[in-house]
Length: 163
Image (tube, rainbow, N blue to C red):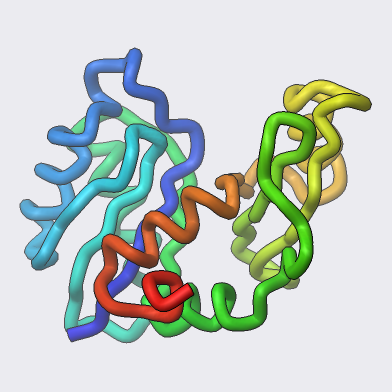
């Protein structure tokens, strides 16, 4: 079994079909094991025998549409891949705080991840997201570095929990 996280684009807890318990239900009905959600922004940790990430993404996207009426892109990453991101420490020496956000954007193409430091004193998050979509298209999803670390911790013992 491999442990994965599905990062689902555009999830917000105000839509009843986007709530964590409904998302977990979809994953459990697909036969995935150890299903857990991390905060209410579309992060689902699960285990699967499959090693085909593209196939997993397609299955999950279709199930979200069929069961919840959601047409959201899904980006699946393995625990090993996320551990590797933590180990490479792309934000070395940078701090996440009120004046700057450390941001990871997941894509389906190359590069797979885009790392940005968002200076919140010089612009709005909405402007930043619009720029990202203009450069990389709408099939992306973004999380803060703090959220990625929380997800890796929820996946089990890792380099994130040793820092």
